[in-house]
Length: 543
Image 1 (cartoon, rainbow, N blue to C red):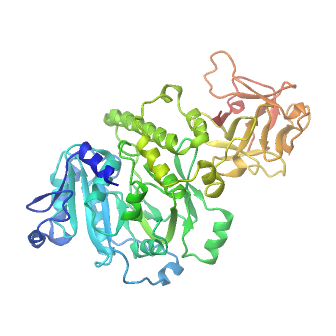
Image 2 (image 1 turned 180 degrees about the vertical axis):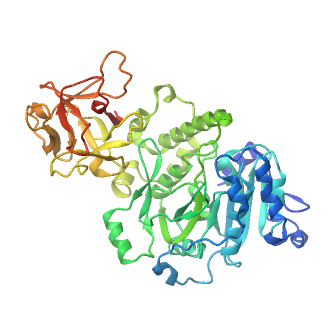
Image 3 (image 1 turned 120 degrees about the horizontal axis):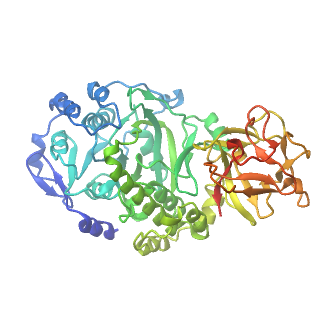
């Protein structure tokens, strides 16, 4: 994959630094004499290092005061199952290069990430920590950390973003296995051995740990269920979803076994370096960060690989809140780049399903210029990658696709302006009624098809006006193409109602779907009122 390294040289000059010597990133290592200048992490002045966060006004996404008061090597709870704690691992596992990129990261969270890796990784497995300074204004932050044994510093002279920074880290890495971490993590006990075990079974695997939440205010480690996997929607937005029933049965029988996942969260995973490069690495023409993990997930599954989550490896991660208002310009730029990355991903990988993705974009963004994708298409062709249709049938059948005759499909939202409540047949106790529940992206019972016959269908059942009477409960009955009671027109009222969404009005009778008592009585048929907020709905996808 020589083109990756050529592109890196085009994009930025990266340097690999030690205490007293600068080495070019394509050098295998610095002069051995430099190693004697390195120290253990506790021998640097880490208290002063972390306290510098408190005098800088740029870390408002976390409680930096609380973070700076914590020890770099603090104890954390062990949330592994008993089955995982009983497991033993081969001592002769592959060595790892841990790649951590950072930009405007609090010193305390970055240091704890590094220290947790050093303290909780067997020394013979940890070859190096590649720390990539992504054009931070203060170069001393990385330089001070590069004094620590096993830490090597790569510095971008200008910001390149997470994606190209990780590629710079890959170029510098010397171990067999790459482990990517975000710069605000704390690895758990016996965290890396399960990941290496999964790679040993199949070299084409990309494996992720269970990612626990580190509370951004209290910094307490909050456990996350090991019954979750990664998913995404047609907007290419990532989310966590429950594993399938068959996977749950497997997990109950063996709490220490890996599970397949359609996608992984972007920040934390392990992969053999040679396989990562053979797959094509990251797309270097993506910007900053966003959707790169979904592009990698689609490519891995469809080009001969596999993605799994190992429940015996747990890593804590701080999910940052939105950044402060003075950085709104940077947020707008990030949104622009995120759209660019999504479009590049969809153009290469979505095949005949690309129009679904395109329909999710605001019209003003649908013709966004994303650069030449020929290079990524060539990778797909050279690896004889499978189709999106294969992926949907084999890997991710839970991702709903439109049927012939659909006008819209997916969740049906209500409860504006936040639109977080969805129609749900199990949201009310009656057997055929439709109630309301919080929206779940890949929950089959919340997904519907709106057809060109104006029916709201789910499998062979359609939303039905049981009685021609105001206040009657609506039900899901067997679809009948001849029944006007199953036909619902979308009406966008004229005039300034200040409400978004549409009414669902019966085609023949003067009643509309009403969700005001959705939780208590289910959906009801009521007189249509354009100003009634509980009669406004929105489809997840309009084709």
